Image (cartoon, rainbow over all chains, first blue to last red):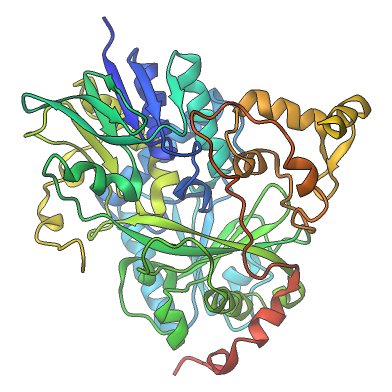
Length: 392
Length: 103
């Protein structure tokens, strides 16, 4: 008889988990309290990046996910997948030196990186401001439409028998004699399963509190601006080098407001002939309405790198809550003292890019197979998550 | 619902900014089974063009959706800057911070 697995959360992580579980013959019920991909997975951009990962496990996990995603792009319904590579561009001479070192480390780890001096960066990216002194590129990076990707994964799971129930909130885990027996629904009643996967992003800690598990996942708000259809400023994703510094919380040179809101340039062209501009990173609670001041700082940062955007038309903005963890790694883990429970959450801004490898790993854990990547760095009780208060 | 039925008969464009036909909306309803107007928007792009739904929203608000298991609001909201503006106008209203240069 096939294993019965309940997946809580139909964002990109839960959707990918449902896909890989059904591929392996599991019988899946996929639940979400709202729409499919209705929260973080539809309030983001389409990053599938290795360019911003630390050399080592971080980048190897990203590369594995990129490899799996290439297979998914062949197998699933279309989700605007393409692989134009990505760039980091520098603001100043200090960043150029850091970029050179970053490329060196990545090349030694076997990743397809190249350093670009001033002449090269302007040859690759002719719309850049003249004073941009250098940059780098990563050839394996890809982009996609995140909500269509989530839907494509859900459709695949559905085609293999998954029961998909949006607008069906889980109230709590259903425990029986120390192990998870299923979930209790807010609408009343329960669903039984052999395993429960909690892939509820920012809402994961609240669901696990009732079983005495505390996870340091916190919502980190990020803004994006959307242009009208019009001329693009290149076909590849471009970020400023300071984006790395902002992501990892390291020191960088930028204006006071850019630092306050964690603003760093992100440029992403879409297949609909508009472009997205980001980004910001803030711990400001659960509100997803965009703030005008943050929108302005993002616009300023975009114009610093792309003077020609002055006349581009911006028509809306949106913001999402990235599920942050203290060491910037997701939690994809069984929990020894709660048999039957698997957690897959805390991907911050990498959920789209890491969904494939995460979904595969969830299926490996649920079905007790050899894992597709190492499990130790992603365990919920790893040392780098310990002692971090949830309300820092 | 009579205007939606007429659109079907005419094969009309229901969102002119995105060139979205009623037939494409019907295909999306079948393929994605969206449970809110916001979700329908994200999979068809209705209302995501230059007019930001000012033209098509009253029409699209009447589209019948799949049965969600509970009744939910549309999920649609309005976001700054509310209307299409030049990027420079956002920059220029940014105040003194805009004059910042690396030291």
